[in-house]
Length: 243
Image 1 (cartoon, one colour):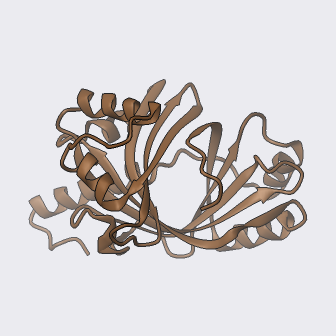
Image 2: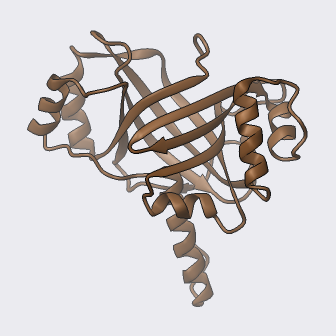
Image 3: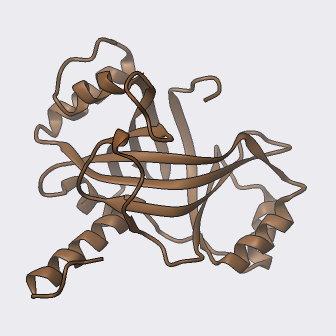
């Protein structure tokens, strides 16, 4: 990745787009945004939670404050590759993210086996506190997707991302196991996220209004948890194994 950034503070708005809406929007954005240097990137995540799924269930209740912890890689990592531990918090609509980079095996030793991290940064200390508070936290779900990220030509802090092929699974919870799982969205749909440090540009608001593209409440982990719960209920009622 480019120059490492460990802290973020921004607003994030999400939108579900059909294929037609996506094509119309991309045509309108071609003179306003550029695709970043990485083009189409595979992003892989392990979300951590308690055995009762306390974090995701709390998040789905839409509280004023919520938080989550994940381990992220860009592509499927191998031993020695750099991955990112991300502690993400949301308070009154503002997203605060803390991110630390570690080698894959060191990150797994730290998060999976609860071994002390060799680093002693402020961000690691915040993650330490989180791990101590949620004492039984463990890997809970794998989520991967293909992402195209764009940035504003006039304001590079404006970021717009498009995610497709969003997959989830609740077993084999290791980044190095590869990206496979259950589809999160219907075929032909993608998730757009607009990430801004403050107010959305007026020109972008006008484009979204003209195309009738409206924000929605959407969490990849939350949607995956809903599908997992529905599958478990279906199987307990005697249905065939969820495909």
